[in-house]
Each structure stands twice: as C-alpha cells, then as structure tokens.
Image 1: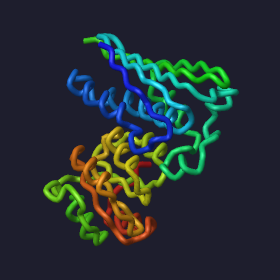
Image 2 (image 1 turned 30 degrees about the horizontal axis):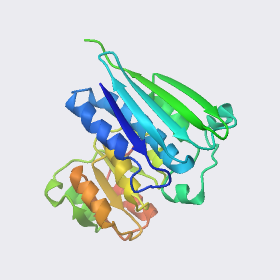
Image 3 (image 1 turned 180 degrees about the vertical axis):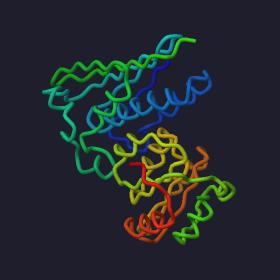
Length: 139
Length: 114
C-alpha cells in the first residue's frame, strides 16, 4: 500500500496533518501501538522539518507485511553538512519555529532513535530526502 | 491519581474531556519543547506545558498523550480544543506557574518520567 501527502512550507497549522492521517491508517491495519508511535514520531519530526525549513515537499508512505518505508522529499535549501545537522543541539531554526516548540536540534536525532534505518541525502540549493524504515514484527 | 484530583490540586479548569476525569495519571512530564515531549515513552502520562498552539495537541496525538494541563494561565484556542476533542484528549487550564504546578503534583506523589 502506498500513501502520498503534500507538505506546505511554513504552514504550522497544517504541520502534522500527514502524520495524523497515516497514524489512522496504521491503526486500521492493526499495527502494534508501540510501533505506530515510533513510526509517527519520526514521520512527524520529518514533516515539521519540511514545514520549517523547506519550500514545500511531499511524503510517500509505503506499507508491506515486513516494514513501513517513509520518504520525505523536499524542495529547499538542502543541508550543507549532514553530520553536523545530526548532532544533538545543532539547529538553524527560525524564531517562529522555536515558538512552535521545535528547533532545538533534536528532530533528526529523534527520527534516528525511532527508525530501524535512516538514510539522508541532500543537495544544497535543491532539497533533502529522508528515508525512514521501521520493521514490522513477523508473526 | 485520577484526573479529577489533578484538576482539584491545580485548581484547573477542564476545557475538554469533562467526562474522562476518571482516568488515572501515573507520571508527569513538564516541558515547553515539543521535541522533548516526543522522546517520552510513558503510559498514563500527564503533560504540563505553557506552549499554547496547535502543535501542542498534534505532538500529544503522536505521542499517545491523553492528558494535558496548560500552565501560566495560558488559554487554548478553539482549534486546539477541537483537535483535542477529536483525539479524546483531556485539556485543562491552570493559572499556576509551571514550577508551582509541578511542585503540587509531586507533593501528591505523582512520579516524574525520569
């Protein structure tokens, strides 16, 4: 199954809409609640990052019996130094983003901590792509 | 502790979820930083926060937090109340500072998350 959501830049009222929609789908699919939480926390952090830093983007969520694969693809300034961006506490967030309760340099770490695999690629002046993989238990 | 007692202890006004005050609270986390809130993995959690915008409720939705008290006399917006209702979140407003609200609940024996 594949679900795609568009993410609007700068619109904090809608930030989290995609995560909320995908959470409802995962519940309907009877995914374990602890795994749902890991998936949606990482998705939500990524979604907020697109709203906060990019000029817009999209989220593609794919679910099969073994795993959930989420791609967050944005058009924007890109990340010049991914290693530095992964450091806890490093942030380029604006005052507006901080007013919303984010921008403390924890987002990418939160994503990494909740994902089984995280891949980041970025090109300055073009955009950033995050791929988050969470494995589903095999019964 | 039941949410009813939390409301009495903090002299809090219940904004939504009036019928859900029989819920138990086993731990409290206090923060205005939503990325911190997203790291918490506790059951039956109460969030104390002075951050008042729609992301307070969205963050709680993602973290499965069902109980929120807004401190420092902050007021929930209609959008926050609607989203809280949709997610069956109990939302309260309290005029105390974060420090005082935490102190009163700690005194009553509610555990910190860590």
